[in-house]
Length: 277
Image (tube, rainbow, N blue to C red; front, top):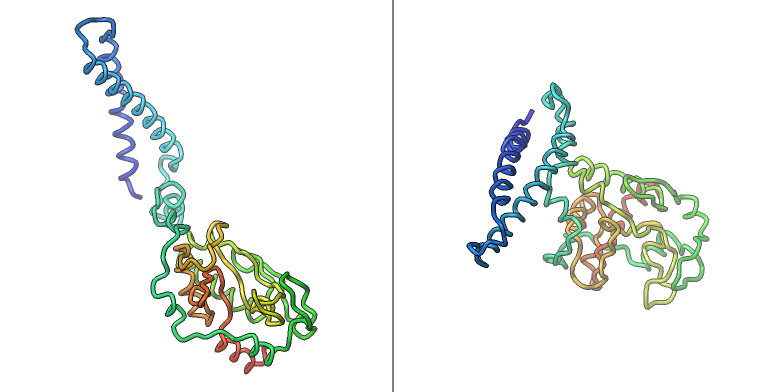
C-alpha cells in the first residue's frame, strides 16, 4: 500500500485545527476601530482572514478525501488493480485532461506512412456502387451483396454500421487501445460510420463511408474542425493503433479530416483475396 498520501492528509488534519485556532485567536484580538491599526495593517489582516477561510476549505477537502480512502486494514498490496482504479478516479491526471486538447498535426502529409486510400473508382470496380444514385445526404444502401455484409453492432466504446471485415478489424484496434491506454479508450466517441452519399463537391463519386469502410471518431464528443491542420491529442494517439491494422488517417488528406479513419487499399485487397468481401 502507498502510505504517502494518507500520511500527508493525516498530518494536515492534525496541524490544521491548531493553525486555524491560532490564526483565529490572533485575528480576533485585532479591532479595526482602533487608531493604532493603519491601512496597511488592515489590508494585511484581511489577507490573513482570507487565508484562514482558504485553510478551512482545504481542511474540509482533506476530510472528504480521507472518507473516500479504503477502510482501515484494507491493503492495496494484494490488489494492484484496485489501487490503480482508486488513483485513476481520485488523483489529478494532467495527461487524461490533455486528450481533448487541440494540437498541430506534426508532419501531416506523412502520417499514413505508405498506406493509400482506395479511390472511389477502385471501390466501385471491386465492390460495385453502394446505390445507383448519389446525393449530398445519407441514403440507404441498395447494393444487395454489400448490404448483406453490413453489421450494426457495438464495437468497443462505440456503435457502428460497417462491413463485417471492417467491424472485426476495428474491434482489434479498440482491444489494443483498451490494453494500452484504458483512460483514452473511455473517452472515445463517434461522429458516424455508414453514410451512403457523394463526396463533397462531386457527383456520383461515393465516399468510403458509403461502403461501410470508414468511421469518424472524436474525444469526449467534441468535433474536430475540418481542414484547419489541427486535431485532438487523443486522435494522434489513436492513429498509431489504426495504422497498425491497415487503416488510413484522414489527417493526411489534402483537405485535412482528422476525425476520419478508413480502410486502406492494401487492407481491402487482403480481404478481397481472402474472400471476405
